[in-house]
Length: 371
Image 1 (tube, one colour):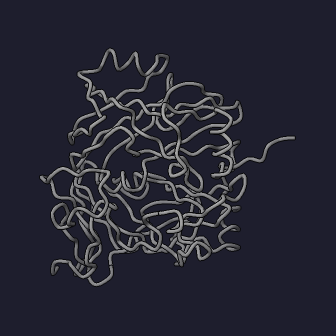
Image 2 (cartoon, rainbow, N blue to C red):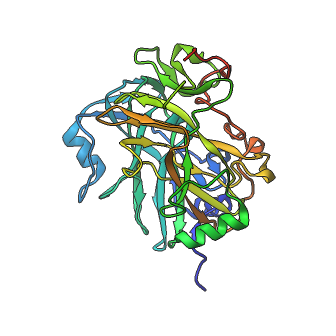
């Protein structure tokens, strides 16, 4: 009997672990297993390298040997400097079946801190993609872009999804799914469902605050701390523009929010397309996974806006209220997960507004400068 195509839920991920398809240097904890993904942990050592790379026909360890500068002990905690590139062997490794592939993304908090991180497998020709049948170790490329950060062995920056077959929706099928399940609340932008369900940016805001711009010279951020840091020490609030839009400065980092509220059905998962040159010279959303139950009424979401990590490239770019900023791709699960995304499993961003990473104390939504 042919197995059902789709993204593997937490139940199937647990079965992969029990069967040895996912193994680790230290036991995998239940806290790592999300409704449709698995959190990956940094190992005890990081390697500072001269440049990013793809291994091609080589192993990652061979590339580290040729490009590595020095090793860093992550056991007690160590600083990863902004602007530097590190390769970190992960605790987890894979022994996938011939019909199961894997796909990785940064965790939400990782993306909101502008930490550029990608998964690498031996002999890989693409980042964040692991081919069906792969057997071997996993590595994370980590490059903090805005803040220098403290990490340690066991810190979780990436998450991986497992997929059987090609369960994605065509344009027409996605439109029908939206009509049946109401995937977002709000008017669908022009262009319809081609390439995914469109999301637009909200520059009207709540109480005058429409976004945050990262400061350039700040203190360290310890990734394992929750609610420790004051937002104003690291971010400048962006007020609702009096006219026009917000000009994104090249290589500055911004946190914005979608105008639409998102509802991910309990039997589906979604991913935001990270970059689309058709909508502007900027990258939106490093952390692209949306778990089943995100924003859904059944999981206490009541509709939840997507928070967008945005960086302009090469030229200043003015973004305006209601402009399309990304697209959501939806895929069915092979089965409903045991638990949905939400506060019941400690999810940080259910019912979020314009939320910064969990390391920051909740900011006052009215704390915005006068335009």
